Length: 232
Image (tube, rainbow, N blue to C red; front, top):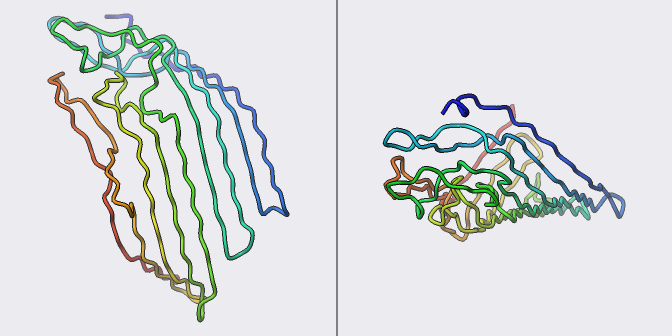
């Protein structure tokens, strides 16, 4: 199809309004923003019927858009304690995508393409949250510290087709670290990633050839390690 032989450039328009604030002698920072993104000629992998087969390639969906809210906050009451929180709520959809790839559950021997207009944008979690805190205390000739970080992502489609078989469930990962930083030239800390050993997928993908097979990559399991740093 010659009409899709050339990939058109994206034309993005963004509207954003927000506020940045600090309170209590800069111990508290609170930033809030709202945004709208509109993209004409959204570049994405599409499909088209060919002689006896489906062909997939990079082309343009007519339009896609997203909107949401973002929050960034920090709380640092003293040099011994600091914390942060970041939160984002985002919704996005294909406003016009008539030649999209079909989800696995809709593929048949006669499938050519599917109209995904109004469907959610792939790879976009409605909720993304992260936060953490660190406490420091003088210890001998240096500083001891304990820190924790956590992140949460709600479910999102791993593939542009929005197949129910390629929906990554929401998950939370928590990390912990305990260390000592000398007043001289070295630092050592023990860290634990994914302390609760949460099972989650980094991505899911349908196998090439529309066979119905799905492959995926699991996120890292609970991992414990030690890091030592030296300054020269």
